[in-house]
Length: 319
Ligand code: BTN
Image (tube, rainbow, N blue to C red; front, side, top):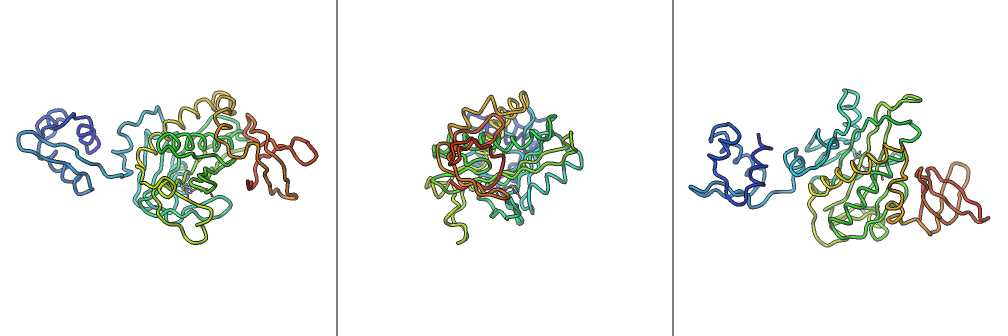
């Protein structure tokens, strides 16, 4: 009901009367009035004028179902959204929901994480109201060995949307990070539950520092936010919706071929590593070379000091 009233307010050219809303939604005017008051107490600025009705003046940047479903154009990604004020970790919650059988494309999103997880056992700082802390639950019908590429699909979607919405020149640092002026603004954490030849589910955790104003001392040199780089705040809800749409577009293409062939040019265009020297720490060696390209399978192709091509599947890369 709140979602429908919000939608009517958004769609109204100017004022919409309580009577019209109650008629359209088949509920009493008192019920409408109650919801309007709820919205006001959540921070929505709604003007009410006698004989004209209600007008939405300003909406807060809330990540609730009503806001996220309004103007979201996807077939299945985010059609089911679970929103929370505070969670330990959206990845943890998504894995729990996945085991309970939740559908493909479900999105879990929190305003704050108290135990945000980074890669390799690190933690992820996720203060309230300032970032996008969300996880996509997917049930792809593909070979488990092809699943890691989905991180690159998500990275490309995030990078493109940040560039379009903010005008800032975000770049992808293969395989999992999005950087701005050399500092990290977004990290991706993909986890999978599978059998040897069957995927039960994949969760992709996406953490984006949107309006984070300050980082702890130990992160200051390596992390940044859209606010710090762009000098203004950005609406999280807009970014979330455009990312879900863009991710769905690329994800469908990826499922067709189980590789990145349909999007590799776009990926390479934004990949900061291409043509640069990289240092890759692997189990028993440190490989230093120059990145030639990213393959359709998502591997980094590096030319080593002997001029040989080496394929890098994963590992820590420092540019
Ligand atoms: C990294 O180390 O770069 C990955 C960071 C991933 C952070 C996101 S925030 C939403 C989701 N929930 C988590 O606990 N982690 C991921």
